[in-house]
Length: 106
Image (cartoon, rainbow, N blue to C red; front, side):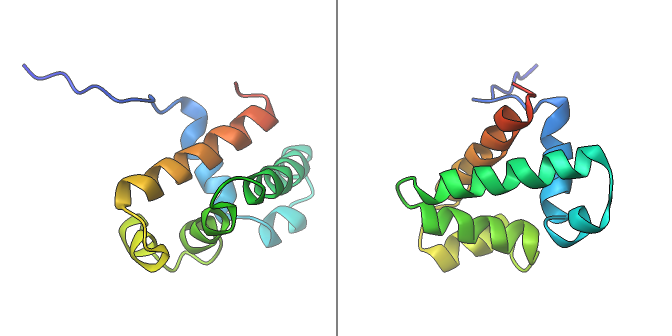
């Protein structure tokens, strides 16, 4: 019997935020619901805050490759940005948790 220990468990909202990022910004603008408007504003704020962080531009590029353009996997995006896969995973997780915090999930 093996127990896997994760540093951060994935909460119910984790996948929701990932799917919402894939819809950013065009589909969220078209979708005229309160939740889409909330998501749009908070994703923009999170991306602005992320740009101010260390390696912020690369973190935003990672999000663009993974979610907005859906052109790369996490491994491929890490290679393009010249970081380890683990660093790319951490940056991705950091962004999702930041958005979750701004949207009130945390």
